[in-house]
Image (tube, one colour):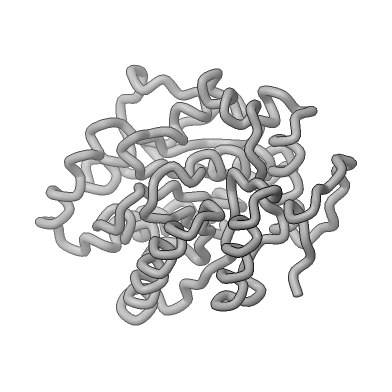
Length: 269
């Protein structure tokens, strides 16, 4: 049965889509069957996996409001073992439509029950808002990956997300938990970065991923080519660190030979 991860943070620009695209590609390269689910109206995961939106006939919008079964809307990508439920701009109005539909927070969960056995890993790219669409992702998942920047303003957003998770756990999904907090665009040279990591560790001990994704030009360039970074430039630092993250999630030791700068990869206590 596929393990389902929601990648969520109500703040935008923290690397949610980048994380879904690159983790999905890495797990697929390891011969796991992967489904990426794009429920963000911006559709960055869809674009990042090389799917042209003009060619999409059915999307996550159709699945959420009940116009299509999830199997009808899933698209196979050109990347090994990776499929996607794509998103289009139609999803922007999905919040209002969901508000008038029965079981509005369980729509995605019910659809995934019909295909979960077909995949080893399912990654849900949630929108940067704590509305009904994001709630669908949180209700459907087993664990949450929380990408965040090492900035003090990001701590406020994390607190809001934690409150939402508590509500979901109490009312809809009692097994939900945080898989890990992932620092992205991380610069260990900044004092504030280390201070934020320490602050998060204080409140969420052993919940921070050892791997911290650094700023990297290749990670930024890859989406414009419709490719995960490992397919765009396998030798780049970005590809190496997403491999490290994938291996960490699998419980494996990192084998990447890149020199690990202080603060980018540190053992959990």
